[in-house]
Length: 275
Figure 1 (cartoon, helix red, strand yellow):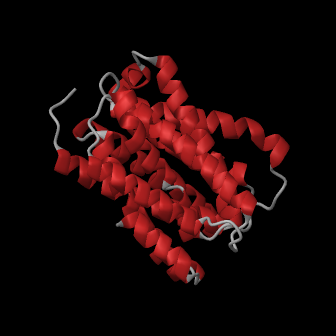
Figure 2 (cartoon, one colour):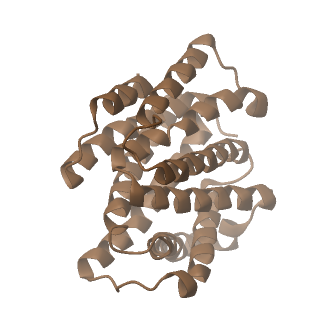
Figure 3 (tube, helix red, strand yellow):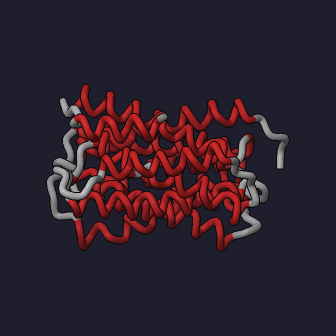
């Protein structure tokens, strides 16, 4: 593994979560009209075509060469599952609240980084995990106004995201960033593409919505490239707390695009998670 560069890793990770917030905002808008499998297929298909057009001519078969194919494919499928459940959740939940609930994932990453990855977790990080989990409970509180099914979808997405992050850290020592990115794109395009004949019966997108769908492949692909490369430079337990920057972007974009302002308890929960 290359020498660690924690600050560079943090910068790459922070850029990635900004792109993820833009990705979720676009998805939230598109799910109001189009089916989830269609949106997900276009997102991964564009990602795959960009890699084949830009990366493959220089990398050749090296792009698909992997030392640990089982774990690489498992990691890709974790992201595919996360995409599916997150999109289903975004159909039912406001952007900021859905984003906040997904932050069960970085809490679990910090907790599991020691037993699974051998990383040292100090008392401060453990206390931060407990406080952050309390914030998540405030956002997704029982008896609140959020759709229960939507909350469950997002929680499942968070669990898949936890596995994806941990596998990212495990694999960066033996696999290149571009190889991991290629298998993610391939898995998503194949999995969602095969479902389209059975699940998509909606309208065809116009030019504006088609461009938004195409943008998903760019923001998603670039975001996951930066996300994966960040693990070459910094440990998972250090990067995980910086995921909370996405809360800021999700809240701002939810207000600007959808005019949605979270209630006071939700804002308190989001604040606790971020702090």
